[in-house]
Image 1 (cartoon, rainbow, N blue to C red):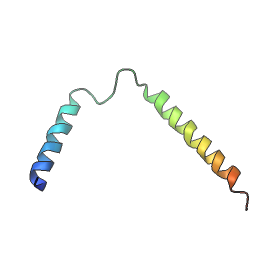
Image 2 (cartoon, helix red, strand yellow; image 1 turned 60 degrees about the vertical axis):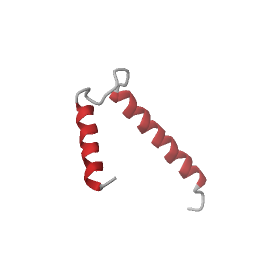
Image 3 (tube, rainbow, N blue to C red; image 1 turned 90 degrees about the vertical axis):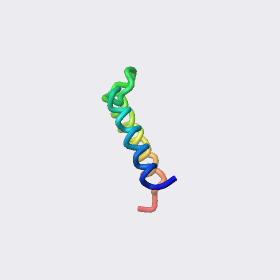
Image 4 (cartoon, rainbow, N blue to C red; image 1 turned 30 degrees about the vertical axis):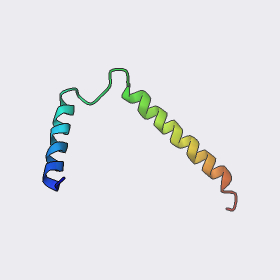
Length: 54
């Protein structure tokens, strides 16, 4: 595959995705963002518990 044909396929794929809006009906952005934030806070807390050398 050449670079040009690959780029053309990606543009076509991206244009098809715009028709549906990109969001799934059952996904609430606030819930997904809040869950990701809580998961990152949990990972931060775990990391700081193991870093006892300070």
